[in-house]
Image 1 (cartoon, helix red, strand yellow):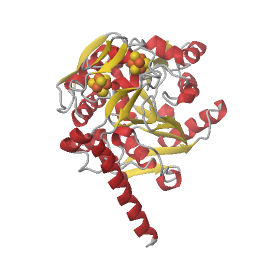
Image 2: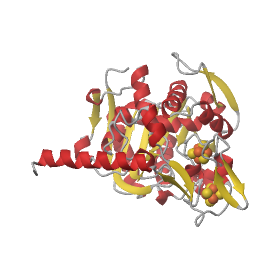
Image 3: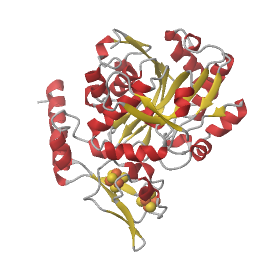
Amino acid sequence: MPLNSTVSITRCKSYDRAEIKDALVKALEPFGGLSVYIAPKDKVLIKPNLIRGSKPEKAVVPHPELLRALIELLTELGADIYVGDSPGIETPEAALEASGYMAVMKEFGTKQADFYREMDAEVPNGGLSKKVRIVRAVHEADKIINLCKMKTHGFMMFTGAVKNMFGIVSGVSKVHTHIRFPSTDLFAQGLLDLYTTATPTLNIMDAVLAMEGDGPTNGSPREVGLILASDDGVALDVVASSVIGIDPSTIATTAVAARRGVGNTDLSKITIAGPTIDEVRVSDFELPTSWKGITSRFAKTRFMRSIGSVKPVVKHRLCRKCGKCIKGCPAHAIKMVKGKVRIEHSKCIKCYCCQEHCPYNALKLKAPIFSKLLLGFSQAREIRHRRIENDWR
Ligand code: SF4
Ligand code: SF4
């Protein structure tokens, strides 16, 4: 674990072209600027969180104006720039196009990285797996810039820098990964395998417009007004989750990183450049339905998760029968029966990929009575604590 890591926090109120570039430059200043990391002719892979093609205002993907600002800075340095990610269901081309990335890339002559060719790469320092199957473009890049988004996540609670590296697994192999690592902890271990195999040189988080609620695709945009950056993606997640009021130790990827000594998970040993966390904290950031009321360590135990976890249910009124949930379900638990989408809950591994993939928000997460009681209890306890703190009794 590095003795000290720096995470920069930079205020940025909008995606106005000049403002976002200015904010990005400021975010990189504490590290000495981009030229500290990138040399002329370096083959640089920008790895955005392109989980699916989506309009920027939905807050599903990092805003294309941030991509533009980054490409401009890299172009000034004479880098050989590629952009690539592996979305869940659609092709990389479709996701790049729908998110407004392709237009920016065409303007600058930026190349699309080939995210179809795969290879086996060795996981360093004894991860969960000895090898991971990743896209070859990652291996061929001299430097990786992780362009992530601050969002909630139904399965993992939070997605930031570390979770974004799941996109270096190609679409088909992603499905197998969910089956191989069905629990949150196992999946987090798999993510750390990927992160340590292809550790980004730099991590930049778009938190100007974040996503709260049922992220990573069907939550609500939430103005946070920040750009965060660090060369330690684990530390970046620790700071980002703290900003939105989530205890970093309850995030599975951060907990696994702490166990393995990857990155800096100790907030007291992370230098914050810019405003303090208290100055920018968003105290009422909404968690996903699947995590409400279960952020304590006890509630996160396997037993409590198994009896309290929420189920995906189809809202037939909203369903347009596009079949994306069927295609994206790793457990083959979803079928079209007599013209209606049906979920076989006995097969469901509760990965919530279906909810991620549904473009019409027709898959909702429903909490069982037990979870609701737990939520009620934890909220009541929180209110009681606040009362005690404020001496309301
Ligand atoms: S992805 Fe959504 S809209 Fe498409 S079939 Fe499934 S539930 Fe219906
Ligand atoms: S039904 Fe949804 S939550 Fe269940 S395994 Fe399939 S994709 Fe995952």
